[in-house]
Length: 96
Image (cartoon, rainbow, N blue to C red):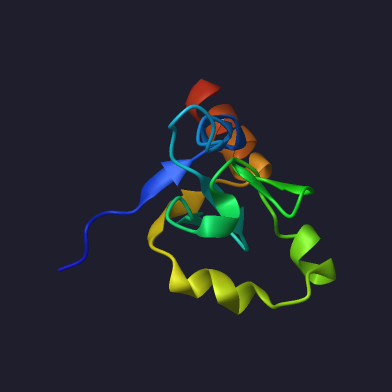
């Protein structure tokens, strides 16, 4: 049986920036990966332009490798899309 997937908002993901001993997490296509053990993410910055704690989906289209490279790293959860959070909040604030 798989452990339940942890959910991250973009704000929560930003906490995992790889700085000062914190874990380095990145998101791509809605999946959050722990890249902390990668030499290339030691400082929380990959090749001077990509930062841990961010959604890299759009940036991966310009990377010299595909997003499948991230499959080498542990999946730690899913990124909650902004529209989903807004819709959920609206539903919980409406009365029947």
